[in-house]
Image (spheres, one colour):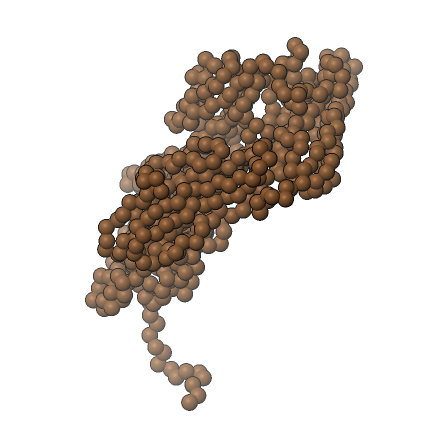
Amino acid sequence: MSRLLVKLGLCLALMTFSAGAFAQVRAWLDRDRINADESLVLSIQLEGVAGSGPNYGPLLGDFKLIASNAGTSLEPGRGGMVMRTLFLASLRPLRSGLLTIPSLQVNGMSTRPLSVMVVGNAPEPPQQQPQPVATGADVFMETLLDDDSPYVQQAVGLTVRLYSALTLVGGKLDQPTPQGASLTRVGDDNQYDRDISGRRYTIVERRFLLVPERSGPMALPQARFDGRSAPGLFDQLTGSGGDDQHARSRPRTLNVLAAPANAPQPWLPLRSVTLRYRSTPQGLRVGSAAAVVVEATIDGANAAQLPELLLPPIDGVQVFPEPVQADEGFNEGRPRVRLIRKFSLVPSRPGPVRVDGLRMDWWDVVGGAARSTTLPPLNLTVTGVGGATAAASNPGGAQAPDAANTGAAIGTDATAASASPLGNAAWAGAALLFAVLWLITLFWALHLRGQPSRAPAVAAATGTAPAASGSRSLALNLPALKQLIDVGDFEQIATVLRSLARPPAADDDELVERLVDPEQREAVQALRRARWGGGDGVAARNQLRAAFARPPQWREVAVEAPSPLPPLYPPRG
C-alpha cells in the first residue's frame, strides 16, 4: 500500500511540474498612444494554470488604477483544454510623455514591459475633433479617417467612436458599407474614458478597414447607434425602464484618386515599407541547407493586399521558402503588418554566389511618387562537402547579421525585432508531452511486473547480426534524410521515414506504432500535423532534425508462418 501511495505521489508531482512548464503569461495594451485626459486598458493573460492577480504597485507612480477585474475560462488548445485567466486594469495616466508600464509579477512569472505615448492637452487635428449633434449632448458619435483623399485600392483606416455621458444598458452600433468600396471590421472594440468640456464620457471605439474599389467622390454613410440608457432614480420610483438613446455621425465624403499612369505594377499604395535581414548564413556548403530570414514591415496595408515575399533566382542554388508569418495590427488609425519569411538555400556546386536582395516596388501615398525598397545583396562562398565554412558579407564589406544579431533596416521606417512566442510554446508542449509519455511508461512497467518474464519485443535496427545489411542501408540513408528534412516537402519526408522500417511501414499510423523512441514518434506526429495544415511547419522540421539525428529503433513485427494448406485459388501458369 505504501508503495502505491509513493507512486501516486510521484505521478501527481510530475503532473504539477508539467502544468507549470506549460504555463505562460503575456500582457498588452488596447492602444499605444492616448491623450492625457483618456484612460487605457491593460490586459494580462495567464495560460495553463490558475493563479492570483498581478501586483499593480510598480505602475502606480505614473498611472492611477481606476478599476480592475478578472475572469477564468476553459478553452480548447493544441493539446486539449487549456485554462486561461484574463486580468483587466483600467488606467489613467498621471503625466504626459512616453510612459512605461514595468514588468509585473503574475503567479511567479514576469510580463514584458510596455510603452504608451501620452499626448498633452493640445487640440487634435480638425478631422479628429468630436462631432456632437448638439452642445452638451449626452450621447454622440464621430467617424475618423486616416486619409480623406485616398488612392483606389488603398487601405484606409476608419474609426467610429460612440461618446456617452450616461450609463448604457444595451444598443446596436453600426457603420454601413459605402457603395464602390469594401468595409471590414478589425479587432475588438476599445473602451475608455475622456473629459470633454468638464464632463466625463465613456467612449466605445470600433475600427474598420475601408478599401475603395473605384475612383471619384465616395459618400461615407452615417454611423448609427440605437440603444437605451440605464434608469435613473426617478425612473426607478415610477417603474420606467430608462430612455431610448439615438446618435448619428456627420456625413463624410472621400475623394478617391485613380492610380497614376507611372505607378509600378502590381499597384501597391502604401505609406512606408521597411525590409531587413533577420538572419543570414555565415557560410554555404554543397548539399547542405542554410537559412536566410527576411522581415518586411508595411504601413498602410494588411497581409492579404501584399504580393508574396520571394528571393530572386540564384544561379547554382535551390531556394525553398517556408510559410509566411504575419503579424497584423492597427497603428494611429491605419493598418500595419509585419511579415517574416525563412528561405532555405541549398547550393549544388562550390564557388562564389551572389544572393540578390528582395525588392518591393510601391507607390508612396504621402509623397505621391513611385518608390522601390530593396535589401542589399549577399556575397557568399560555397565550399565543398568537406571544405571550410566561408563568411557571408555585404557589398560594403561589413559582416551580415547572423541569427543572434539583427540587421539594419532598409526603407522609410525602422522597426525593432521582437522575439516570436512560437518557440516557447513548442518547448512547453514538448515538456507536457514527455510527462504524459513518462506516466504511460510507468504504468506499463508496473503492469509488466506481474506478468511472466519474456524476451524484449524491441530490437535496434543496427544492433543485431541478422539485420546487418539493413543497418548499413540505414546508416547510408541518414545523411540523405537530414538533407531531406531541411529542404524536402513533408510528403517526401514521410515516404522516406516509412521506407526506413524493415519491413517498410504501410502508413503513418504504423510508422508511429513501430518507432520506439518517444521523441521520434512525436516528431512524426508533428510532421503529420504540418502536412495536413493543422501544425507549424518550422517547428515540425526542428523536431525532426533533433529526433532523427540518431538512428531510429523499431519494434519487432511478427512474421506469419506460411500456411501448410494449398492456396484456395492456385496461380495460373
